Length: 152
Length: 84
Image (cartoon, rainbow over all chains, first blue to last red; front, side, top):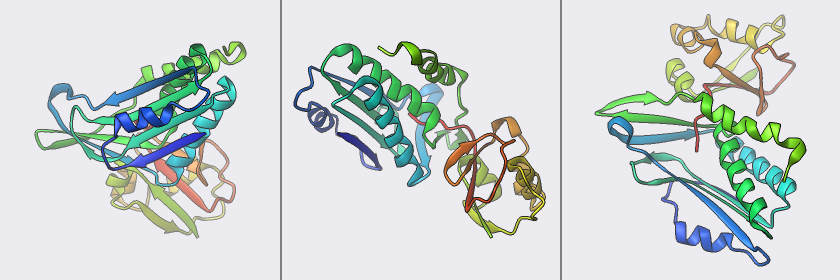
């Protein structure tokens, strides 16, 4: 079962975790991303490519499901304006055992950061600036390429 | 006519998220289309100035700028993604 949601509303963590705990899962891993207030950021806005974003996230979930034989996976991403301290993304992976669930959860968030068409804009003291992509995010996503042959 | 989509900083520089263009038939790569679009306005020129930070998609499929253009219905241009 794959659940992909793009929403403007706040992410209901308790409800998402409860949904992720599906029958047959011995291990459920989750990742929650929270808006940081780096250097006085007071507003973060998320733009995305409607339709294409959902497709990209579904493809990622399908790839993770095949690679780690997941029972279920979840990706919920917020768009629009949000404040520091608010949840921006939630990822969950459910598998029979923990190794697959842990790796799949890391894979989903690492790949999401470099493959899904989202763009962040930060506002500090009234001045807006588009966030630049980080090389460390590319490296985090690429480690799953190198692991391809030895997928656990 | 070709539908061209712009996102994030590219959209802001150009001033619209979508336009329809009639590209000359001798344009064979994505980058050649960028060169041609860049002559449309000062905003287009500014949006496409930093090619290292420009990404493209043909009918939703992410491609390199040197990719063959082919005959897509839709081309999208945007900066590197920053979700998560």
